[in-house]
Amino acid sequence: MATDYDAPRKNEDEQSEESIEELKARRHDKNSGKVDEDETEAAESFELPGADLSHEELAVEVKPKQDDEFTCMSCFLVHHRSQLADSKKMICFDCA
Image (tube, rainbow, N blue to C red):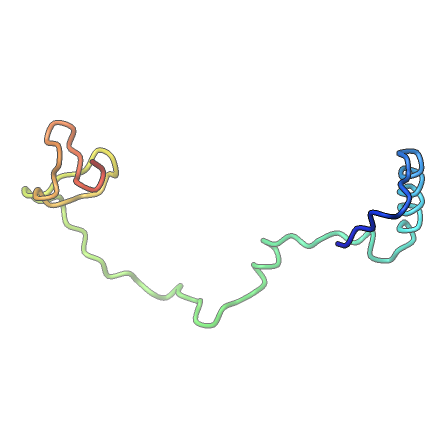
């Protein structure tokens, strides 16, 4: 926004009166009382193509932790023993 530095300055009383007048003028504006729509409600009405996965089943085989694996006590991911940086703290190389 451009500022005219040569224009005469107004004191605080004049600025507050002017802003009150602007507010009174906006009171009769049609869009001033309009409430913004909630984004989550608006997003629920949209349906993406191919988004209905209710009939799909995940086919993932979950295996227990193997003897040559450990759980990092920092990131809580299961790593191979070759990734063990500190055997006392049980921390992987990524977290060390």
